[in-house]
Every structure is written in structure tokens, then in C-alpha cells.
Image (cartoon, rainbow, N blue to C red; front, top):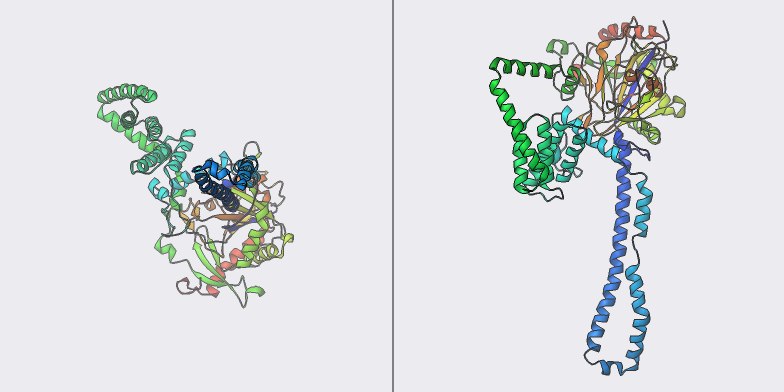
Length: 572
């Protein structure tokens, strides 16, 4: 059997990062830098305003002084000019001082601001970033079944009322989301967001977006979904606002004709045929992306399959890996998260300083994450993987080396052939849809470039708590593991025989409130496409010798009896 490897993933929810690269929407870490860029621009703009105010104050003082002087002088022009000093000063003012006032008025105080804006603009997000962030909102809306009012009001699950950073969507924002969906022929989301924009307009919100434009988009998106009556209703409302709207006038006739045609067809259709048609429609819905629906339900905390009987067999314990010298006096806190496949969580397994150092090391290296096209083998970006990645080698810093050693000591797996750690920072609504961490039989060259063999196991460090979302879910078995800062999760991807355990197929749910980073192997991209991408925030390593995995499995069975579980998992 070829050399085997273990896949360890370091899950991080990064709060700050920096970059001057594109695809900002794929990395919350890089987006944080945009906040500081915008803060700098606001400071520059305020400086410009102060300069303009100072200039206007000088002009104002000059005007007020001259207003008093000319009012007095014009009452008795000859008497005023009879004084030689007044005559001299009049000549001086008109010949010199008014020219200075002209120069002051014409002076452009915006040079500093425009110069700063020009420099910063090269780091601005582009249309792709704006569209990507918009689609992320739509993805979060679908995954967590949020209505448009909830998102527009900023009252997302996990957001505490009164937080200073809670924000709301304006009519313009809702309209923009609808337009972006419309450009992708996504008429379902177009309708949702145009309805929200219309609602806010009806409630009296001031907006540069006129109601006619909203109704125009809305009527067409509803029509495209086959709802002729509602399309006709919106069109009629549009014409009450703008009776001369040419497209609406044409649509009104067309919708009337299509509706009459549809009603006639329905009258001729027998009830039996109609019932059969509805059943076929429902079957079609059920067959549509069943795995994705399972994944999204688990992300929402629904569809968990742990029975009370199985739950009673999950324990917490102090663990020393068969009396390992490092953990005899200070064993680690181990908790069973799931039984089949066995998923274990280790508590308080990484320190705050270590987490910050990993983030610091990864920060300047983040680049858009890619996957290997299963047909062409070419590295490319994918909509089901929204993140940026960086790579860290053990020799680069003692902290990375210590993390590697800790994983080896706890798991008993050798890390000599470990792949470098990959840190991935996820963007707005960042996710990684269901995938395997191990190479499958239909991928014979999955680890050819790595030279390490398949991945035995996955290890994840969670480096931040999140308010909502961000779980690691296993659609095949109905399991969900929530992120907990300072903990790590571990499971085997392969059976002792070396065959892949297909029940470990898992996904990273998008973070609803918060952000994250993951650490993985850099070479995963050229290895087993999606299987190289363990989920949201992890770190991947290769290791040798399957017997270590077998030893660990054997020793686990005896260790449970040697160390009785703690009461109610209080130690965890």
C-alpha cells in the first residue's frame, strides 16, 4: 500500500487581515482593510471640507468688510473720495486686492483629497466584488431561510439589539440586490428584493430610485415565473403612476392575451390531469439538489439524526494518548461529538497567542482559493468555494511547528510527510459545499504531486466563536459540529483497510454573523479537487504509516474504560 497521509485542518475565524489584491468579497480578512481605507478617505474628505470652510470664511470676512465700507462710501461718494487715503485704498483694492480674492475663490482646495482618492482607488473593490457580496447575501438568505425584511432591517439571528455596527438596507440597496439577481436571470430573488424595495417606498422612505422602475422589474420577474395575474397587477399599478410608459402599455396587452389563453386552457383541462401535473411538480421539487437541501437544513440546525440512545453513549474524558509523557500530568479534555463516523472534540487545545500568531503569519499571503477542474485538471475558482488561502511551513515559525507536534502527540500519527498548513479566510457568506477530504478510486493521480498517499484523518482547530452559522455539517449522517474558539475536531476519513469512509462527506456552512479563516495544505488544489478542501477553516497535513491510525483506534477502545467519563461533560 502506498504512503498514507492525515488531513488536519485549522479552522480560524479571522477578524483582521490585509491585502491589496482583487476578489475582496472572498475574504472577510481582506475586506477589513477596506474599512481602514474608507476611514482614511473620510479623514481626507473632512480635511478638504475644513480647507473649503476656511477659504469661504476668508471670503466671507472680506465681503462683510467691503459691504460696510461701500455702504458708507456710496452715501457721499465725493466726500468719501475727498479723503486721499480713501482714494488710494480704492485704487489698491480694485487693482490688487480684488485680484487676490479672485485667486482665493478659484483656488482648488480638493487637490489633497483627490490625490489621496486616486492613490487609494487602485485598492478599491470592483464590480465582481460588489456582485459577489450581493450573491453572498442571497446565499445566506436561502441557506438560513431569512426573509428580506429581516435582512433589510439588519436584525439577523445572532445580532444583539443595539450593536453599534448593525446596519440597514435602503431602497437603493434592495433595488441593487434585485438588479444583480435579474442580471443572472434569477427572477425568484429579483422578485423578493424588488418587493422589499417597493414596500420601503410605500412606507415613505426617500429614495433616488423611482417606483416606476421598481414596478417594471417586478412585473417582468413575476411574469418570468409564470404568475401572469400578479404580473398584470403590477403592470396596472405602474400605469397609474406613469400612464405613458410604452413598455408597460405593450406588456398590459400581452399579459391580458396570455392570461385569457391560460384561463381557457385550464377550463379545458380535466381535474385529473391538473392533479397529475401538480404531483409531477412536487416530485420535481423533491428531486432538486437533495444533498444541498440536507446541507442547508443542517446549517439551520434542522434534521439532526442523533437519537437519545446514541446520545447516551457519547462521553467526555481526560485523555493522555496512552500515557504520553506530555499529557500524563496535564491530559487534554476530550469530548465525543458523534458516534458514526466518530468525531471527537478537544477543548482548550490551542492558546490565544498561537491563534493570533497564525493569523499574523497568514495575513499578507492570502490569495483567491482555487479547485482543480476534474476534467481538465486546471486550477480555477468555484462558486461553491468562496475564500482566500495562504500557506505556512513548520520551519517558518516555532508556533507552526508546535501545533504540528501537538497534533502528532495527541493523535499518534506521524507528521514527517505533512503538507504545509493552508490558511483560508472566507468571505461574505463564505462556504464550502459537501465534499470529501480523501481521494477516491476514480482519482488515481489525486496525490501524485504530493507524493504522500491518501489522507487518513481530518483535524480542525476552531479559532473564533461566531454568533450565527459557521457549523461543519455531515449530510450523509445528519451531524453538525458548531465552532467553539480554542477547540479542535478530529475524525478519520479512511477505514483501517485504507478504503474511504463516505459517511465523512461534509460541508462548511456559511457564517451568518462573523467571519472565518482556514488553514490547509497548499498542494490540495492540485491534488484531489474538492476532496483536498476539507471545510471552512482547517489545516491539512500529510503523514505516513497507516499502522499509527490502527494503534490509535485500538487504544481508544481501552482508554474509555481506563478513564471514566466526566459527569455531564462539565470538564468540557
